[in-house]
Image 1 (cartoon, one colour):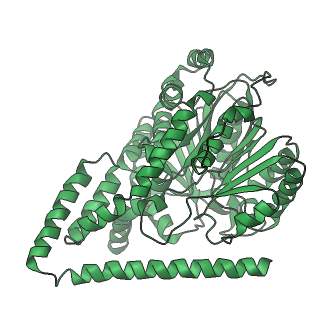
Image 2 (cartoon, rainbow, N blue to C red):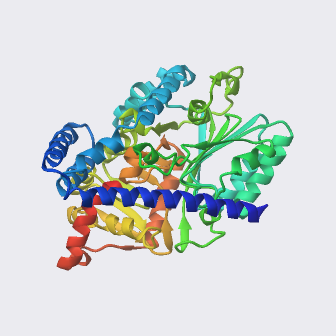
Image 3 (tube, one colour):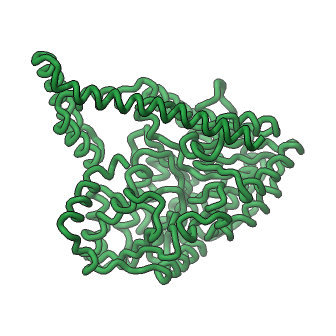
Amino acid sequence: MRKQWFQSLLMRRAVIILILLVEISSFIFLIVAGTTISEVAAIIFRVISVIVALYVISKNDKGGYRLIWVFLILMFPIFGGVLYVFLNSQMISNRYAKNLNDVIVATQDQFKADLKIKEELKEQFPTYARSVDYLESGMNFPVYKNSETKYLSPGEAFWPVFLEKLRSSEKYIFMEYFTIGEGKFWESILEILKEKAASGVLVRIMYDDMGCFLSLPSEYPDYLKSLGIECMVFNPFRPFFTTIQNNRDHRKLTSIDGKIAFCGGLNLSDEYVNEKERFGYWKDSAVMVEGEAAWSITCFFLQLWQINKPSSEDFSQFDPWKDEACPIRNDGFVQPYTDIPLDHERVSESVYMHMINSAEKYLYLSTPYLILDEDMISALCLAAKSGVDVRIVTPSKYDKWMIHQATRCYYRDLVKAGVRIYEYTPGFMHSKTVVADDKCAIVGSVNWDYRSLYLHFESAVWMCGTDTVLDVRDDLLKSFEQSDEVLREELNFRRGWSLFRLILRLIAPIF
């Protein structure tokens, strides 16, 4: 069975790569052939490119995207505009966005907002009132009280807790992950899922096709279905250039009976729990949510599951608190949220910006990639110049050389403004956490880069006044101690190297 899967995996990848190479060759041919087309045709294409360039400049996109597209149109004035129209006028993207919006609108009433809780938070933590209002009133993500959270880092700490909670399931298990890879970690999970499915528990798994491109064969959903597990592949990868292929499901969610949920940066593969070494020691994190806030995470899963189903589903049948009160009582506040790239609302960026601008004493964060637009750079620099202790930890050992070099392009401006940057020396820092002033923290799947902030489906949990906030802080302080600080004198690059990084910074938004 394993050998057949491996052969299927190689065959599918080989065909897709061949088709993509043909497409790339065709684009290159068109660019080269552009020098020999007739004068009239050349003028027409140039006019199209000028119109497209003006359109790009006028769009409400991030500056980095506008800049790179205008640059490409100037570099290839004959076909640059046509290429933009081809990549950005896909009917499937518009149809998908409409279907998703219809599902979200139809299920808004499933999220249970309690105005009393929001008012209570405003009284205790007035600094974060605007952020909470934005997520609850503006984006329909309620803030909860009757919920407990537990911070789990690294992956080895997450693993036994995750298995224990899966075993406790009675009605359903919903899992949504960017990457699933065969190995000890996934096999330990799958054994429980098989047992639960056989005993009548509803088990659903959704994974991203691109995220599992090199780890699972195309027939894997059929295998899971043979075990009694419902499976869906999110946004199946097609070997054609289209912007919808950029919109990957980067979320890492699990809901167990709607009472317990997990969210964070951990995928279900051996490197995430250090059973397999990749790029040194793998540092990651997740948060477990128990109580009322777990219901929001359940709805997040159901919304994406619903968009690919022909008929609608009544979410309330999965609501554990429909007929009974939640027994958990907690003084802290918990607000799960998601970010969807097709609604033109930059939720993750807005939450991060609120957090940066609200910080009074310190702001600590971890991210594997640091590729930011000018607004976020300015906000981080302003906070540091205003006396806030701003610290960022990124990996020392990287998974993608070009992206790591692009990350380093941003060091100079930040360090010059007083931001302290560290590189995690034991290995790869994959954790995505933020904490400020011992009051609030975020744990989720959102990297501090263009892809996570503007292109991917993401999820996170914002917490305020919980013990977990201090756990996140302590974990980041420990990571700083295990890292090398990037000093200002180390950032005086040679001219050639500096030019290379300037080019990387220009093209970073398309990484």
